[in-house]
Image (cartoon, rainbow, N blue to C red):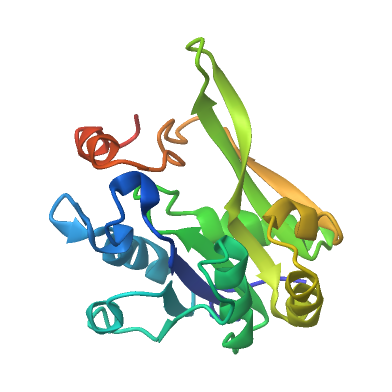
Length: 212
């Protein structure tokens, strides 16, 4: 089973509250002069056949980026799984790839490597893992569940899970065959999966050189 870019719809997750950024709409904060969600869209589009955005505020601003925008179907900012759900509901390809808007340096070969792994393992879901510095200064590999390639026909499963009150990504993915894909090859950027939770972190990330 070979998965091509045209088999994948890419979804930018920009539907959160932005609580740690003071309640601002995170996806519309600038990263090197470009709104975070648009930056993610531009980074994702060459990797997939179709794109869309999950957002819950300022929908006209997101629509100006030129791709379909879908708000959560679940109430009260139910978290990333609400984005997964609306993505699957509107996905017209066999696979959906999710990326958060607040991780502007995510890999440009994300889709290809997740697709290769899911094909090789005949899995339902592929999830990235990336290097992350710990408090003691060491670097550890950590699962990045919002960077997720999943079969579009998992919609019914996710509907049941969320209707039952489930909100944690890993609790749901654990019910399906999932492969974790480490982004630890030589040349993989150490900051690839660093997400900016505050405006200060976003400004610091702008100073990073490519490949660091």
